[in-house]
Length: 247
Image (cartoon, rainbow, N blue to C red; front, side):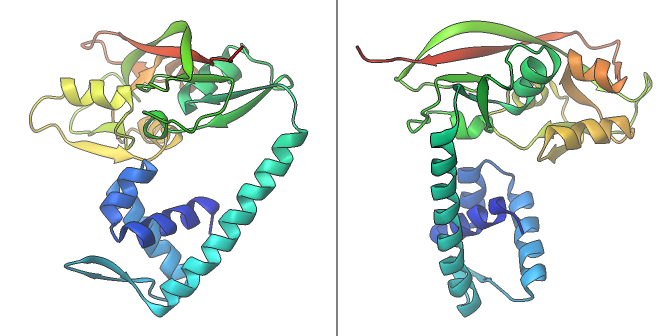
């Protein structure tokens, strides 16, 4: 059981819908259903009953909801206390951009910056963000931030080998992901498409020869993947936003 599971359960409990909870939390519906099944299997109880009106919590579900409220509240309080002792600039950043700018390019020193990795869907129109910098390719429109810098990720369709037939296109389950949008826009009718919840999962499947994905060039080099010759490289833009300070 992970903190993410508790947050997902709370969303399902309050929204009474797996689909709405998935949209709110930035996951695919199938992924949320699978997490719920795993949670019920771990606890060995039924947490919800499905009906025409959506999800109805069982008695065990009501009890577990009260538990999640306490744990998540304490977790938030702990983060706030630890955050008060941390120094340096706080950066909210997308997962791929963290791997590229921090891990690969060493643009931001881990000793000088504090990082929070968020999905693109969470950043779209987010009015609660407080980090000094936000680095993302999401459509971030928080009025408290201004564009500081623009960059590009060079991307290409990649596979384990040059000849690939019958394998699905792999896309991130985050609906705000630009790699997902570009892949779906270019996909031919009838092309099999599979959603994956994480970039590490997508890369692992491509390395195993189980699919093709539009990936940034640095991941191709790191994982010795082969760009498909018949497809052109693409430029995926990203932006660095800086929080506007009042005088």
